[in-house]
Image (cartoon, rainbow, N blue to C red; front, side):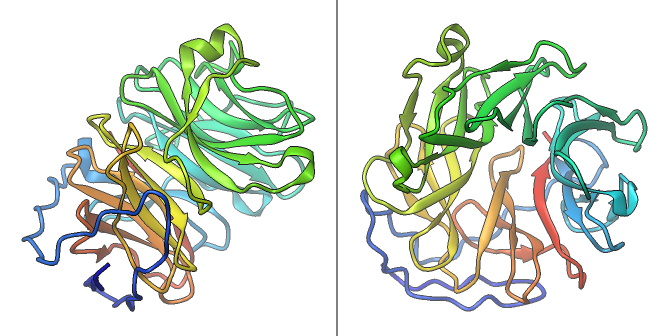
Amino acid sequence: MSIRHIQLSVAVISVTVAAACSTPEPTATPASTPSPTPLPAMSGSGGGVIAFVSDRDGNAEIFVMNADGTDQTQLTDTGASRRNLHPAWSPDGSQIVYQAEPTAGREDIWVVGLDGSDARQLTSKRNSRRPAWSPDGAQIAFDQWNGRNTGLCTISPDGTDQQCLTPVTPDADFFDPAWSPDGTRIACALHSHPSGRDEGYRIHILDVAAARQNAEGDNMRRLVEGGDAEEDNPTWSPDGQQIAFTSVREGHWQIFVVDTDGTNLRQLTHDAVDHRYPTWAPDGERMAFQSNPDGQWDIYVLNVDGTEALRLTAHDASDQHPDWRP
């Protein structure tokens, strides 16, 4: 596999040789560097806005910014009493759901309006994390500790109608849900540990309708068969044809893309730093993600062929968990 360099607007990430073996072998990325696709219009609505988390005021809060890195604006201000993490947009772009982590106590799911108003708590009984809004706006998926394992659940935006979709078992945990654009499937990271034997994290696809009928049934399939690399952070392309995720196959977390049937696996980044939490632009041409070449997390965007990575944040604080507005 060839060595490729990713150009950054503020910092340069060093490149390592992509030589790790996996099954199937990722397709090599093109050697040529095409012209970058123009960024979407910075209109303050639609595809031009990214939500993210920053601790630049001393506490993890939700921020929003234009997709060129301008107009970075703090949305929540809850102070040292809790950390706000993992923002996810509503389909109409008017609200953000997020994970609130108190200094003492359980994590819960909250929703807030785009102007910072109407913040409301949706869950209150068990640790609930990493929310994701369904494409039709009717449900929010999240992972929740149920007393025996972490499972995937859904809840209505008004906090009613909670239902869990995965088995209650001591042998596996389910994390990081991501809805397909048609709302029929959820991608997630499954951590299998039968009888205490750690088999790692792998991306799986859940059939939502089947899981609603019988959460204890066999409603999942693994996305990429074979191999034993750790996998996490799945996210669907806007057309529903591909899934991006992160995986450790070269000593660091890198970004991969694969077709939804598990074929055509390809690696987008090949760097001696970590890249996490990819999120697709609405036009399907770019991704935002977090990376740590300077020792703290910052937000970047790159073309979906792995070229032209541009740094959006350059604060001394940690900026992470990006989510691109639909």
